[in-house]
Amino acid sequence: MTADKVKSAARVFEILEFFASHRQPARLHELGAALGYPVSSLTALLRTMLDMGYMTLDPATHAYLPGPRLQTLTGWMQVDDYEQTVLFDALCRLREAAGEPVVLAAPADLHVDYVTSLHRQEGRNTHIRAGDRRLMVQNGTGWLMLARAPRPVALQIYRRTVAEGLISPRDYPQAAFEAVLDANRDTDVSILHARDLLDIPTHRTVHWDASMMSTLIPVPPGHARPLGIGIHGPTERISRRADELSELLRRTSAELAARLETV
Image (cartoon, rainbow, N blue to C red; front, side, top):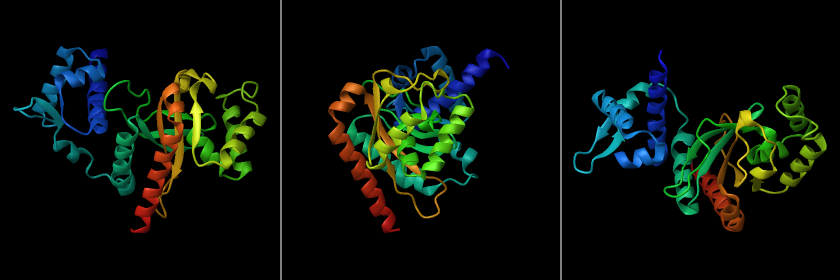
């Protein structure tokens, strides 16, 4: 497969990811501004998707939107109703209220995976994409989860992270990790400043002017995994709005808890 075909395949998925976050029709110039593709390449990709029935084009507004044929590709797969409906809608409301990018995070062994990442509607946008991951021991949601786990379990995660060469105990001693756990044990909202993290290029952790506020959220009985949500953006703005954003996170968690009680 040629490099051009690989690039085109990646761009098709990036177009679909844009619509998954945007959740409304978009015109060519909006897609081009958001994705940074040459107009000629973007037009060709959209035309192909249109021809195959995976994209629609409104002749009146000239706005694109993924077509219903996409559902036939994944409709046979079982999806989690809570995460895909109730929780996704809550994330959209949180983004609107905060005016900042929001994420949904889940633990994955030594890592935290960002399951969903919703961009800002306008202005400076998020550097986190759905599918990105961070080390559990270097992540606000991870800290909240590990702080609530038995201490031997949390330390095992730390030691395995060290054993696999993902962090150095010289750069991040166990005592420093335990201090972070203690700081997060008695709070329901964690605030993380990227400037305080280790520089781990393989995990794209360092964005010096970025911060994130996170909280854990309730899940239905028998749900496969614990979950956390976060609001992030430039450090100055997140720090200035910390009280307001903390309240939004707590309110979202409380609304989800109330919703689960009625199910």
